[in-house]
Image 1 (cartoon, helix red, strand yellow):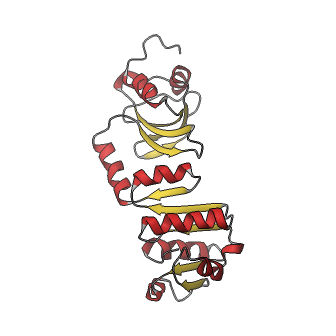
Image 2 (image 1 turned 120 degrees about the vertical axis):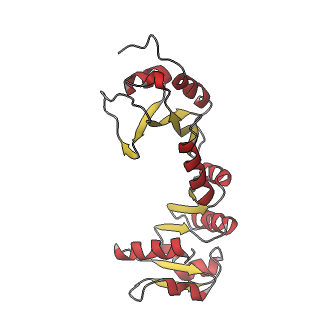
Image 3 (image 1 turned 135 degrees about the vertical axis):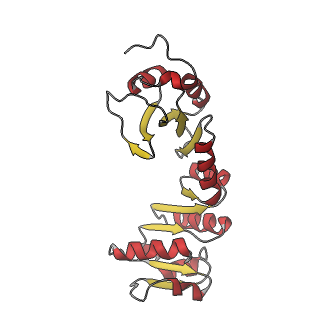
Length: 217
């Protein structure tokens, strides 16, 4: 749903991978963003209207992406796709990251845009504290981005895991993501992306802010 810059690019990419694609937009002229060679279906109408969704093939859909310019429209359409038509893979574009966390708890994957991007840039300019990147639908497990204090440089990732009870999913180092091994050591500038239980985030960040004195190995 949505044939703006994101929607048209997504539709073209899926079409190029030989997926069957339908694009919904309220403005028929928006379909001009699609290339002449686009093989998918275009449906003019409101993206959360059930008749429009059925015309687009929602009853046979394996996935649904709501990427219009409106948060409310996207989340309503995403919920209709998930709850009414049982589509397994549903993603909603959300401009307000505060809403994104709420809808992730409903089991709807969200992609927050402008404000989220600005927040990520600020966090790299002025790093401090932990930042939640993902919450599982039950709200029990969080994926958080954690900054490492200089006292931990040269310490093994496995030591942090043993002390914190968290599990490191991956590291961001010099702008690149990497999977740590059993022998990986923390370095200056590293960002830890760790799975942490709800309610334990502050304690885990406090551990990284302190010195790991007395830690084994």
